[in-house]
Length: 284
Ligand SMILES: Nc1ncnc2c1ncn2[C@@H]1O[C@H](COP(=O)(O)OP(=O)(O)OP(=O)(O)O)[C@@H](O)[C@H]1O
Image (cartoon, rainbow, N blue to C red):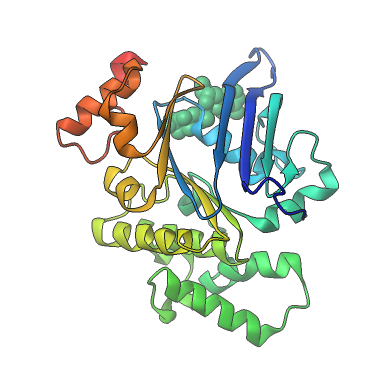
């Protein structure tokens, strides 16, 4: 993979994403004209109203949208460009998708509920390593998997368990360990702390913050969890109906908001809400 010559691991310039027409459904523009950059070592928090395009952005940046095996309706880049680790994603050849995905960790929104039920935790976490290299040394693999499990604060006894034996929060942490097992330079995490209890949430946030302290690691973190944003995000981007409503540090964004959706969020924050999802629904 080429290095990011301009120094920014993620560069979005006037990016528009669209779901093509399918059956009776017309084409749907999910994101329109998004321009932003993520710096080396930066964690960018992304929040926005329901349907504002956050998960669509995550699918594209992670490369999941370009996965040839996927049967889902997939967004396509219809305008502008997204360049991640020097790789322009518009026009990414199919043969390069797998290689691209090795460099970009992805924790999808439904990661915890879609772990393969017939695989043990050890198999689930180690799978990306074997996908990259079938002949990877078994002992090195076991060590790496155990290190990842420890990193997400789960006991080693969990390695032989199956997803149905784990709580939702434990599954979420297994999914995160899997997303990070290849040591990606970029992590795209879609609601990584949704549905997990407070103590674990802090552990997950801390793990992402520690990774973010490394200059060679950047992340896009979609979350409405304000304490997580405060502890982890260097800046936040607020999306509303497919457009960028604001970007900056939390203080910059909420100090003097102009955009109505950002104003509504600021009001919710003043009201002491920690999770600011859905509070601006009347505006949507
Ligand atoms: N497979 C699809 N086909 C067509 N339109 C879609 C598809 N998936 C999402 N959309 C539409 O694209 C827009 C953005 O959806 P997206 O899931 O990215 O929003 P979001 O901000 O992640 O929402 P939420 O917070 O509810 O997860 C929405 O209007 C949604 O209805």
